[in-house]
Length: 113
Length: 114
Image: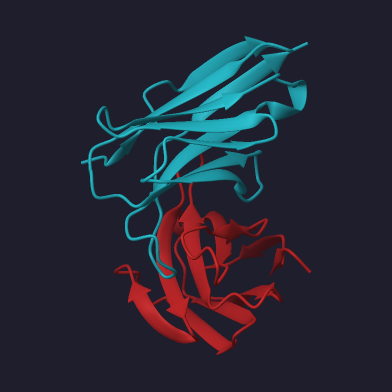
């Protein structure tokens, strides 16, 4: 298994909803990341988990809550989002022998109505 | 202040010719550089990386050149194919370690015509 998977592919939610994004990798990578990407912009880092511990939180609003239940799984819990949070949410992971490389999943396209 | 810059928003090339995508950076302490390819509504796909101690890395049709004195790197695609049409992002990993945020350029849209 050589890929990062993300579910769902698309998500539409209202501003009062609670939803979760899921990311999974079975490559033994120990660092996992959440990025947010708006149209025609580069990805922006949100969170980094290293060895299942949150190591970086780039001043992300508390309506986004990350969780790393185990070394293969990364969740992003969403609550009370705003329309401007609509974006492509990307998960990535780094291999242990080439830690400088990051491999991205296909992303979840989130629309907040 | 942008630390990684891709000054050409777009590039058009004919099939079979060489595509050269350019990237400049400002921080001479960056450890690794990476190139990603991205189709619309998909995640970036890793293409190739280069360490700051090297000046060239090659993988199939893709070659990355690094000129440290000029703080410039380029991605060469030879021969270009229509399927190469995508947005290409240059990125820097400042410390070369896991858990480090990649610093991305704004991307260059490559169009390869047949």
